[in-house]
Length: 186
Image (cartoon, rainbow, N blue to C red; front, side, top):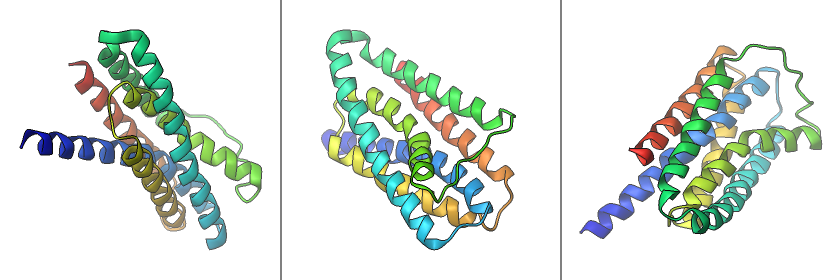
């Protein structure tokens, strides 16, 4: 009975983290979608984003397993601290003011930069999860599916909502990661 409960708890935690990380793609997708985007570009950007959301946490998880073997007992605190820092960083970035020049989202460079920028957080979370014994395949697939789906939703929704919504999406994702980091520490 406890094994099933622990597995369900791990599954719920991974899905919540995947959605939280996908909020970055969602919020930036809204901004790009507001500039006007074709459906073919939505599909291309979202597919590459999903691939990056699989590759980055995969690399992070292997890095985390290595770091875990070095840190030993303080692994939980290190992983929690990493999530707290990442969540706080996402919250601060959501409300940071400043002009940013966007690269053309239709170019190959633009697609790669968009996908990389929204999946770097997945690498850090992958490092944290790699310090634990989480299900590798489930984690990377959940991150990839959520990252791609949230990207599609953000790009399509960007045509219809105001630009301010994007800031709040990233802040919510940061708050969720911050909360999980605190749970790992305490």
